[in-house]
Amino acid sequence: MATGSPASPDAAASPLARRLNYLFGAMHPPGAPYTNAHVAEAISGGDEYGGVRLTEQYLSMLRNGKRTNPSPDVLRALAKFFGVPVGYLLGDLSPSQAERVEEEVRFLVAMRDKRVRGIALRSVGLPPEVQDSLTAIISQFRQQMNLPPDPSDEGGAGGAGDPDNGAPSGRR
Image (cartoon, rainbow, N blue to C red; front, side, top):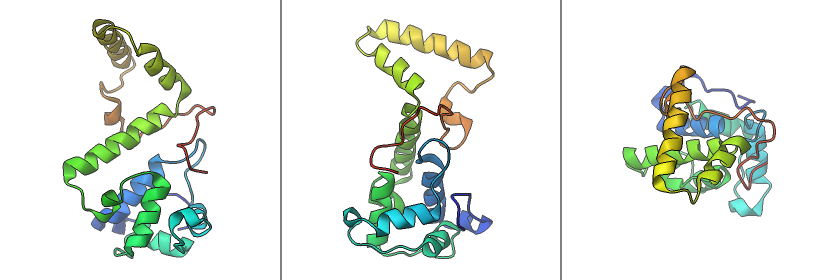
């Protein structure tokens, strides 16, 4: 698998593959998801990842569920690249902790959009009742546009379509 495209159906059997594919789908610079080649090259080419050597082919096998037991060093490097706790990839987190990590990823993805970030920052310091009013107004707009009340219900990590969005820090 040379691209950042979704993995094969075998990935459904592997929690690691599902989590890796979730991160590939969510944590990327604007425009296009990371490719396996890009991630493997970034990890293999930098001392910041502990000298781990990772090939595009091996990463593909992890993502499609053909390999399910990488070394802790590989998992640490992947977790560092995507900015998540290594326990998320190791499967050491409880379901609620893993969901919290994914919620934080969705938040980071939303905050890449400069318009969303601007709305959030402008509400800082306003009294709680004003923030509640703003939330109600946004909810009304979402309802009028037939969007789910909670943006996390839109499926996956979402994504901002603004070309001026920035990638999460430390990537690409």
